[in-house]
Length: 254
Image 1: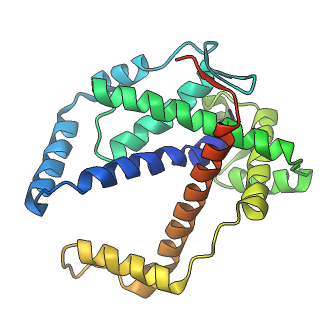
Image 2: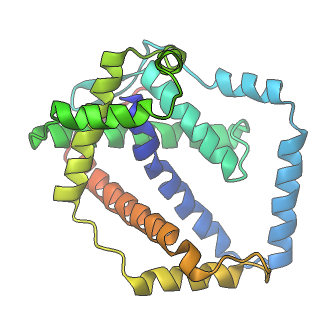
């Protein structure tokens, strides 16, 4: 599957992981114990040799041409899995998990495979519905990406670093354009209300320690709105993937 979409759609992983974490948080533990555990995890992560960690992360990858799953007859190859795996590894690490332990490695593989299957199912559905990306839309997004680099040479170097050609990048952008059209027209994500944003803010403020640096509601309202919109979209995507999977032929090979 396309690298450019991975960061968007692998969010289904974090949604699943968050659900698991929410279940764990329902256990009867004191706030002091939770904080102590979190601090211990951070200290353990800091003590790990970065080079040794990277070796363990690389060891979780598979051969580029290995078929890791088949979705409605469409093969998902190892290179696609490895791209998604790298993102998943970073997500686990950012959430305070050690992706190199035996238990976490198993979860990581499961989440990554499920994410790729979900991504493939969604793109199959999008193509079935006939969504297209015109050249203007592709070029607009391409220009936005290019503006992140000071020179065209820097942009070219970035393509090489990601093992991409310009045509491949434009193909990935085309998929993203179609994905955006699908979300807007078919997913029917409910709009975020001011009441939801305020409730979200109050919940976060209530969990945070009193601090003079606590941001004011108006200062972060738009950021909170974006976060809630993302959450709602991911929830809709997860539900749609489950629906599509029930009527599809999916074979995991890893």
